[in-house]
Image 1 (cartoon, one colour):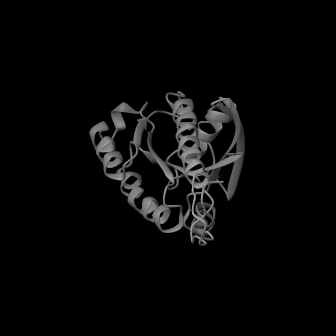
Image 2 (cartoon, rainbow, N blue to C red; image 1 turned 90 degrees about the vertical axis):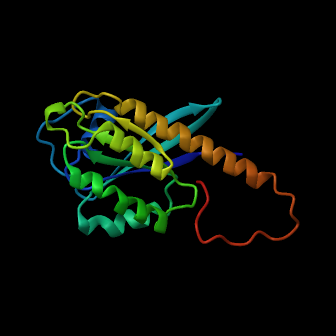
Length: 195
C-alpha cells in the first residue's frame, strides 16, 4: 500500500473567506482586504500518518461561476473536499447543496467531505446557527466545524483533520484493492480511485 499524494479541494462561493483560510493555514496571516481568488492556487504540506510520509496538495479554486468547469475537472482527481460557507451569509450556506451536487456528479464515490462555517468571529452578524450547520453536515454524512480565518480559530484543525480522514479512507481503499483474490481482470472504473 503506497499513498504518495492526496488532493484536497477547498470549495465555496465567492467572498466566504476560502482564500483567507488558505493564507491563514500556510502563512499564519490574515489580510482584511484580501482579493478574491483568480484561477487556481495549489500548496502542499507533508504529513506523517502511521509512520508513512504523505504529501497533501490543497487546491484553492476561485468560486466565481466562470471557474466552475475548472473545479469540475479537479474534482475528478480529488480525494477530499472542504466545503466552506460564510456564517454571516445565508446565500453561501444555501449554495453548499450545489457544491455537493457538483462533487457527487464529478468526484469519486468515496470522496471525503468536511463542512466548515467561516467567520464565527462576527457573532453579531451571524445568520446561520451552529445547529443548522450541524444538521446540514449530518444530512451530508460529514463532520462540521466552525472557525475564523481572521482569528485562526479551528483553521489548522480542520485542514489537518481533512488530510487525516482522507488518508485513512484512501489507505483502507488501497488495502481492500490489494486483498482482492479474484483471478478475473479488474474492470475499468469510470471514476478514479484514490491517488
